[in-house]
Length: 508
Image 1 (spheres, helix red, strand yellow):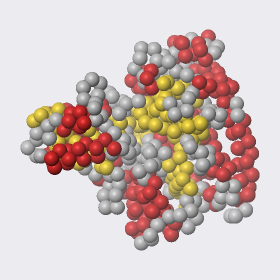
Image 2 (spheres, rainbow, N blue to C red):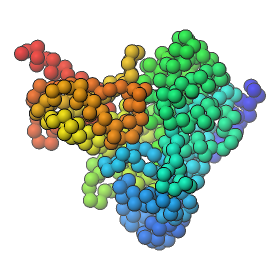
Image 3 (tube, rainbow, N blue to C red):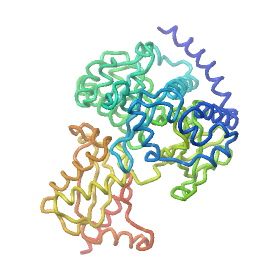
Image 4 (cartoon, rainbow, N blue to C red):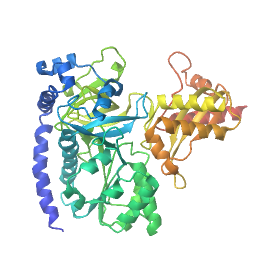
């Protein structure tokens, strides 16, 4: 098996040379990508509506086609899921990636075409391996198995030919046969949709494999690691899989998890970040020393960058690669070979480098919590508060929410600080209704809460009246546009408020 490594390294060097061709010519590469997209798109319903056949340059493209969000394309998606074709793209759409919903829906469904599968997601996956071998030329990665912790897979009820699932499940379901030789577990286990059973099956069926890499969201990966260590009585994962050398992560910030992973996994494992969304595979870490991930420019995605202050304006402006600035927040706008046109992904990014262009995900265009992959938005929590308040007969004047990260004794959860105008008789009953409401509104939160596998019940704390206003006043931010943040993706604000409350009580 050791003979494989030099061969793979040579192939990786050849592919890396090809990768460098578009890295070194980013502007021209993106211009060619857009031309190819428009050529395909002109034969679709949306292409005919906007006269794609008369769009000869980037300026005309941006002037003619408005920026869209999910609600703007939802009517096309619904028709596609009923079996219509040639609406957004000129080839059939039989797969949809299911992800957390918009303000109106519990879930959204992103079209996946054959081109987006093979020319975007799978090509980018090959580039990830190329990048890894480029800075680890003596790697034995492909002499063992890659453990893939994917999502669940379901059939659409609208049409027997239309299927949907988590992005990872869609990718696994459509992967070439040979990929099964280097992947574990078996597809029947990888696509299970009952997470408690799935984690147990994953542990049981991979514990004796020669696992050299792991790919998955940190939340689920940590739960699997803990279960494997329980089963083996090992002190870290390297004792179970001595040839483990790579963990590929993405989806949520790895910062809160890194210390725990180092302890659970052991020494000698490399970490590699990727940015693979339902809308496309956007970026991957091309060097362990570099700050940020290399933006993938030749995989059927044309990028625009909206300065965050433009979001919400009547005619928001976007810029191209040649005009971006390091450290500035941009909302990501993409046109893709999945049939998305000037689509606002919802993420904000910052450039950490130009030529080559590297980025990092800086947040969302709206307040959110995504510490565990749950993608809870303000609209979700506002509605959940209203539903729980109505059920329990209470009035809420203000609230803020932040994550409580994994500890050795507990799973993560959300902590709610709430000021009540009319408090509940039973705070635990209110917390239960709040949790139920949020599960009904957000499918990703519901999945993480299933049987307390990844998220336990939320912690709800009643705050004395005017706590938030008094805290804002202490910061010199009372009045005007200043308000308590509804959601935070870290604990900085909530810890300040709790400390402020304790200080006030001490003085009283």
